[in-house]
Length: 461
Image (cartoon, rainbow, N blue to C red; front, side, top):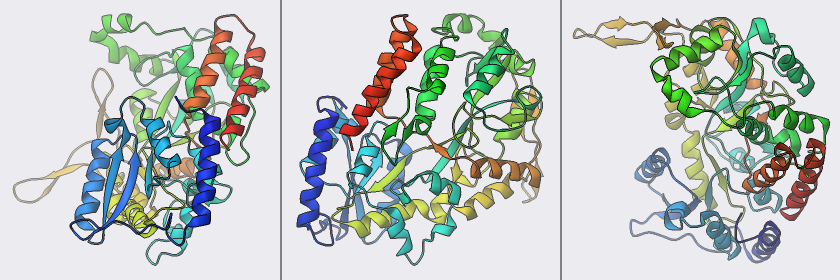
């Protein structure tokens, strides 16, 4: 958060919330929702950035809803110099939106601790159409803070480390020591590869550990961190084993055989683990047929709770506790919970899971079907499900009930969410650099990180 310190933002936001709570009635600041020229009540929304998909969602809602119209202030477009500071300044000035479309750079934990966000369970429990039980309980639980749900993630994927079960073992999740022992047992191998490379840099590994395993080191509920630990020190020291950077020029020089070499490294065991995203019911089968050509284990990130995997939302939505139009805000969020919206992720080619149980069930059933097209006579002509492995097309087949249950069990056992806080990540990057450059030991750097991050967290609560 630039130009406005975390301490100043937290203090002024707290004061603004106290003022708002003491002077408002049922609606936010006692304000009456604006009525547009079309007769619809305005729902104000803040966003740092809007992709084409979100813009279409807003447009669809506005076209179909007869009572409300969402108007979005996109700060990255209107104030590209420093959008987050501009957005926070507006909040501090009392310009409270009804809805915020969260971006990873936003200080959502601070928003929650200051009482700025409404508990969405309250809206759900008072709604005649929406019920908590209609949605994946494990995902909702993962996004809770102290039993309340402040963030709505309409869709998600699951990030994890995957490898051959014969090499990495069948069990999900592992301690930092187990992970390091696994690496020590394979000193001549690339331990982790990325989406496009068979090895990753030290910065890429360490960044993944910090941002994807956020809750392993920071308790959102208490605001306490734990970086001065053996686990964090061990991961920092392990990161130093990776190359400082990946030679992309060399990769491009071998572009003619690149994809064959890439998949061959995983098939032959030269690269043992892959950073991957599980986003549909075919994801695991593709890795088993295309990448590793053998049963895989979803190992997760070292030291992370549960199965070590991390839920990653495409975007999240929140409602301000003092929204001037809470009913309209909830109607907007309900659009993303509807069958119409959720069923968009019930297709074979989706890269994200829906959160509604009925849509998940449809996605599961779709994964059991062969793709087909209809000929001129309306008859279904079935085709094979294939993926490219660098040499040829590989038939991945269709899912069985056992395959589907494996994916569901994996989702339901995932306890962590992906969280990125630019202030915290900057602190960690700055201090970790003192270790990687040899100026401090890993333990010394971790102790400074602990003190600085805890101060940051205290200032923003």
